[in-house]
Length: 192
Image (cartoon, rainbow, N blue to C red; front, side, top):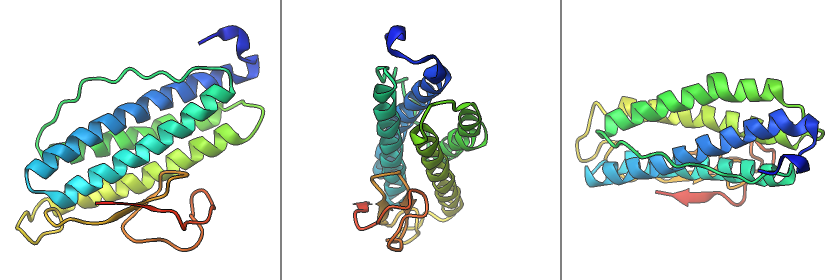
């Protein structure tokens, strides 16, 4: 990253966006690996949830990367090795990671945001709100792991709908406007 291109008022925001970019990029890689494990265990509902949250994290990383470039930086992420455990343990680990982002990381980044325009605050808020929804869905996924019979929600393939602007994930197509980004929602990606 070339420091001479970065306006002094954007330094903290840029540093935080870089941290968020790396966090979201790693979450995408982790959840993708977790989806493979859930599929191999026949837990297709859980696998779909991991794929949907992985796509959400990828969208959030992309949004952060775009802003990093606008502020004069280069988005870089060092992807860490993924430790895949049981699907229940993976759901729990994903929920813990999400809790850190929504309880600590994003609120702190929003409080420290000093960029000249509102785009960083908007993108950080979208990630925070999408993260809250993902945490709720992961918590529901954990609750479904008590029953892993062939027709249980954890085993049955489920469609998830991901908003490609902000990363919002839903189990149903939502109303005309996304409650996170306030954009028309005619373009949800369906992920199973």
